[in-house]
Image (cartoon, rainbow, N blue to C red):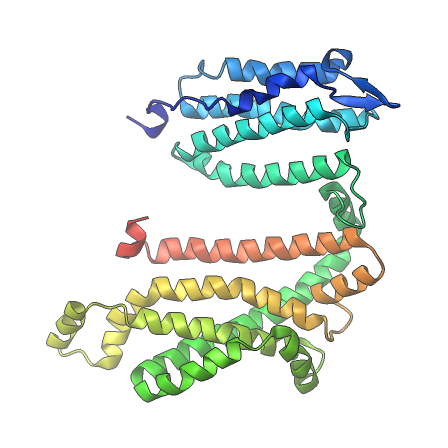
Amino acid sequence: MTRSKIARPAMAPWPLVMLAAPLLPVATLDGTALYLPQIPAALALFALTVATILARRLPGTALGEALLLLAGVAAAYAAPLVLLTQGHALAQANGLWVYLAGATLLLWRVLALLAGVSGPARLAGPALFGLALVMLWEILTRGFQVPTILLPPPSLALTAFAANAADLWDDFRQTVLTSVLRGYLIGCGAGLIVAILADRVPFLARGLLPLGNLASAVPVVGIAPIMVMWFGFDWQSKAAVIVVMTFFPMLINTLAGLQSAERIQLDLMRSYGAGYWRTLAMLRLPCALPFLFNGLKINSTLALIGAIVAEFFGTPVVGMGFRISTQVARMNLDVVWATIAVAALTGSLLYGALALAERHVTAWHPSFRKR
């Protein structure tokens, strides 16, 4: 029996809170409250959502029910956007917000169903969750007319992204491709090499660990201007900040990983006459791979943060940190959010690529097989 054929749990009653929506105003126009029967488009979308709930048991699989309910959720999320397009005000539309709250609870059911299926559809859950957050952000900021200086809607940031694509690409190339990758490789490589040396020479570990801990505790906003004075405005100063931030996490994780080999495994290698370096290459480093990937994943986001913060203190008029600082001063918050989105996507992709590589490289490891 496949997982999609397993009996589905009953749906919680919470999404049915949306049935109270017809009793409350769903929009206002020129100060007049409007109800669902007075707005055909909103009534049709509401009826579609209710129909998907009533028909949820018709599909024979969990995936089918999830897709059906997802159509109802999409209809609910489209309703505020349709009303805004028609010129309605939503700040006092209590019925619409009740409808939207019920649809969000219905989305919870969709995500739970997708988590139980196998295959590529299982991966759609996190993407749907992220998309729902963006949609809610758009609906709430436009519906309650939040000032764009405080929080612009995602559509405005997307427009700014399209209008400033050339500048954002130059920033990405300067920050990520020039500074982050070099600093990340140097910092992680140094942490790995020093950890092996400290493992080989125990007194080094006792001396280096306190120093590494001290360096990692230094605030980046304090050390960044010093590095700019030492290494100049170009990528070298950003790479130096990244090395300071990434060295200690890599050192600690590598040392912990090298100690993870079991005693019986070490005795077996010793019985084969294997020396330190052979044992390191054939047993201890493979056993340390999960810890190494933990350090690499942690450092992938630390490196990006370090480079952006360092650019606040000096950079050759390009870079994500430079763009954020200058556009904030000009009150162009949409460009700032577009830059933040690029940085967030870059960090997520770096982390995801490392997690994917970990899945392939350490699939044999007992700790990974338990997941």
